[in-house]
Amino acid sequence: MRSYVCAQCHVEYYCANKMPLTFPWGDGLTADNVEKFWNDITFDDGQRFFDYKHAESGAPILKAQHPEFELWSQGIHARSGVACADCHMPYMRDGSTKISDHWVRSPLLNINRACQTCHHMSESELAARVDQIQQRNFELLQGGGAALMDLLDAVQAAKQAGASDEQLAAALELQRKAQWRLDFIAAENSMGFHAPQEAAKVLGEAADYARQGQVAALEWNSAR
Image (tube, rainbow, N blue to C red; front, side, top):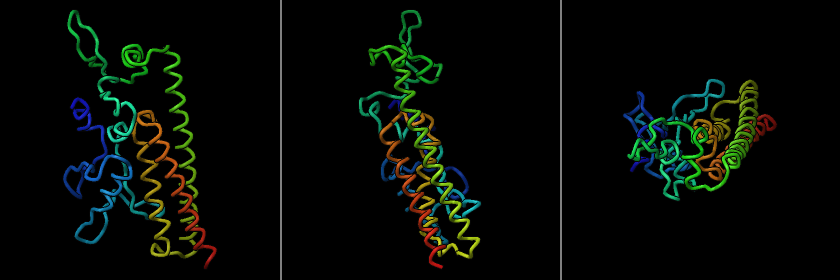
């Protein structure tokens, strides 16, 4: 229940003009689950839910907010019963009283109390492990971003050659899927640490969908 306090804000949500405040958890908490929840919403005009239309491609895009709770829920700390506050607000002593530290911050700034109560190893080793996870996540994120840019270049070239949105429907749908996954991890503030394997999976899918979309756009150009 302590983590649900954090999950009132540190989550993916929608709160604007299309509908009331909505947490998209009806199908589960993974990036795939949340994507399905949004995809299943259709408005009276027949349009599927989207946050905005991409200025260059025109694809109806989903925009992730900051899904820390969702990604954390897929990681080893969540499965081990470690709450957000255990790491970001670790216990401290105030005289004879045990309280949660109300200086909410990165555990890396307080490794002794945030990490070493469970992980009995040096601060330098713990920091190095986090750095390795986050560096690998960064590299996957950059690779996925490069693939998405190649997709957008291929779509733009096809549009300039006369392709319509209907003819590029497959490529634009793949852009939506790729960009959602990239944004899900980029907007989540742990740089993959909250659930490294899940984050790597999501970013791998992002690059794959982007390349599939690029191929779809290139195929239109080559077939005309």
